[in-house]
Image (tube, rainbow, N blue to C red; front, side, top):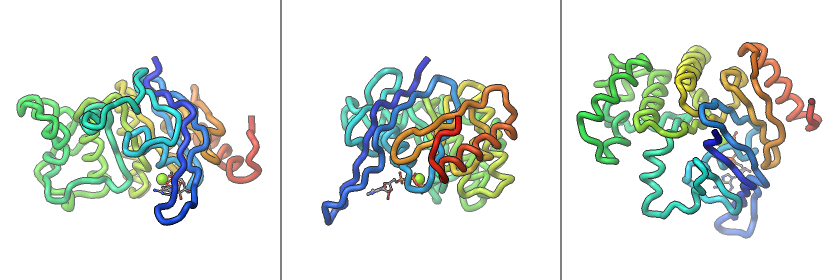
Length: 255
Ligand SMILES: Nc1ncnc2c1ncn2[C@@H]1O[C@H](COP(=O)(O)OP(=O)(O)OP(=O)(O)O)[C@@H](O)[C@H]1O
Ligand SMILES: [Mg+2]
C-alpha cells in the first residue's frame, strides 16, 4: 500500500531583501510504499533537505502536494499541525537535536509528554525501544555523557516512541564515524525489517546500501531510481556509486 505520495512538488525560495528567486524543487514526483526503506541522494544544493522539510510540514511547497495515507498535508489546519507532526512523523537529524538539559529518558519521552500520554503508557513503551537500541543503561544520563552514536540512537528512540507512520531522517549518519554509522544503519535496517517505513536523505553510499530503493535527485527533480532487489548491500553499494558518478558527470541515464 502507498503510504506517502509526492505529486509535482515545486519550491521556489524568494530572498528576503531582494527579488532573487531560487528554484529548489522543480517537479518532484515519487511515492513510498508502507514498509519501505528509501534513500534520497543528490549533490549538495539539489533540494534534498527542502524536500524533507516540506514532507515534514516544516515548510510549505510553492505548488504540488504531499499525501500521507491519501490525505493531502496542505489541508491540515494550522492548529493541528504540530500534533500531526508529533504523532504521525518521526524525525532523525544529522546533529541529533537532543535537549542538553534533559536526561536521555526525558528526551525520548518528550513527544509523549507533549501529547499528554499517561505515565504508565510512556513507561511501557520506553523499555522495549531502549533495549532494542542498546541504550537502556544510559537513560538516566544527559546527552553530553554519551557518544555521538549513542546520541543518534537516542534520537531514533525519540522518533520511534510515538509509533509514527514514517521516520524521516536527514543525513542520520552525517556526524558519525564509520563504525557508529554502520551500527546506526544496522539498527535502522532492523527497525525497517520489523515494518517501520523510513525515508532518509544521505550522502553516504554505504548508508544508502541498506535501503531497498535509492532515489537520485538533480535539478530539483527525481532523475533516477534503483532497487536493491536480491543484491547484497555491497553489490548494491557499487550500483549506487555508479549512478552517482553518472549523476555528477555526463548527467545521462545509465540504464
Ligand atoms: N531558506 C532558504 N532560502 C533560500 N534558498 C534556500 C533556502 N534553503 C535552501 N535554499 C536553496 O535551495 C537549494 C536546495 O537546498 P537544500 O538545502 O534543499 O539542498 P540539499 O540537497 O539538502 O543540500 P546538502 O546536501 O548540502 O544538504 C539550494 O540552492 C539552497 O541554496
Ligand atoms: Mg541538506
